[in-house]
Image 1 (cartoon, rainbow, N blue to C red):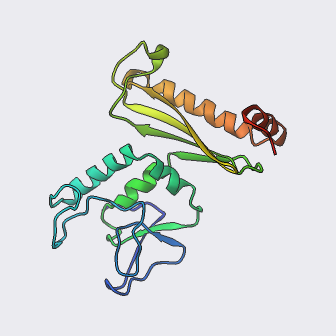
Image 2 (cartoon, helix red, strand yellow):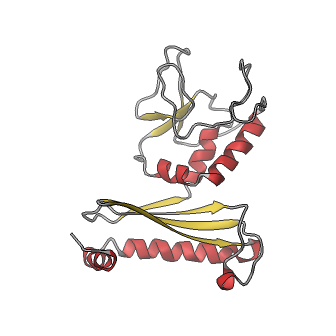
Length: 212
């Protein structure tokens, strides 16, 4: 039997009278009284739908739908970041029975791999560090001398709200050098936590622009 992610819940009620659990975000496609979520699976399972998948025109099995959603997350890593900054007590809801796999499980599994580190400064700066699988690019080991196909990457997104500015660093590695990515992630996380210190944060802000 499938064990759902602890933050996954189920919407009950009929099509026109959905019952969304308290402190839950609807994570599916547009439905009556439920707005489309950015986390929706663009490749729906065919459970007797009137029309096939709107993206590829195919009627998908559950396994196919979940595989395509994993690819969707690979191609859109910001989705896991967006879910990661949602309050920890908010759950993610869908219509799927909880004893069956669902795209929400896939999303939350990726979200668990994201570290969100707010600096607490007057610019509302947040560091978001995540490890993601990749299917394109070459290993950056040895300043690009490896050249083997990349299979994993670490991203460090610096999100600043005042003024609004987002920048991203990215390092990729092949299967032989994946430990490099894990070490880079640890360094970036440690650097971000160090910047939670007000003095070091002020020095950081001064180095990237006029503080305050």
